Amino acid sequence: MPEATQAGLSENAAGALAYVTIIPAIVFLVMDPYNKSPYVKFHSWQCIFLAIACFAIEIVLGIIPFLGWIIIPFFLLAVLALVIFVAVKAYGGQKIMLPVIGGLAEKQANS
Image (tube, rainbow, N blue to C red; front, side, top):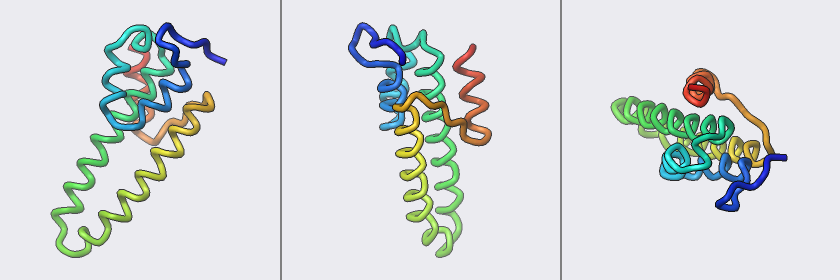
């Protein structure tokens, strides 16, 4: 079990909070002692890359008339379920690597 940091948050809690929005993810990447933890950095980067990918996919779906507009709410619901799943796993100390995004996050966390 990871130890609590000086701020009182364990690495697991910080990893889970990184998925709330991209704001905590960015804060954890620049704030000591979280920016020294590969675990927290991985989850922060994965959240940021997931947000970028979702934004790009939503733009593409928004361009497609009617069918894309119908798909967007279901896509966003699936993303919400994915974020909740990954945050719960992060809180439990597990590292779920999403396809493509997980590899990029791992590379950024270890650099």
